[in-house]
Image (cartoon, rainbow, N blue to C red):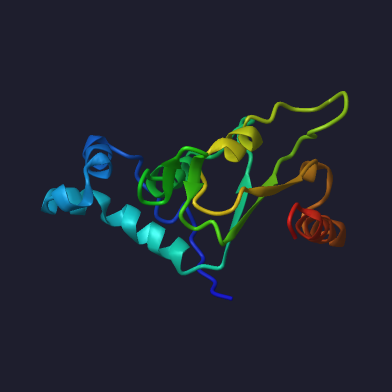
Length: 166
């Protein structure tokens, strides 16, 4: 299995700009050198996905949502006619033979009377994944467990083992 590790915080990925958007919507044969330069980072990130067998996203939940670094990565790799195609049956990922899993950590709870809002999971389930539909697991209430305790590691192992499709 091919492993490609990318820390989305080192260095921070730029958010798409006007040049990126225009270049990504232009047909490949009509792109000039400036367009190719605007898409270079995106192409590099997509190439990492193309050579990987499995996409694992390990992410914290900040203020009930995704960190902007993950949103920037998504905006750079989720490109129409590059990582997904629009068909009569909906949007189809071009890497549909690969799986994706998201492990999200948060200090609060996702269920019960003290449940915190979770805007991240529904968003991640709706984006146009180039892979199979995203499986997810939540590591909740991690703030209630001391870091480094064996129970923390075991909870995460259980989450991974019990997530959909695995």
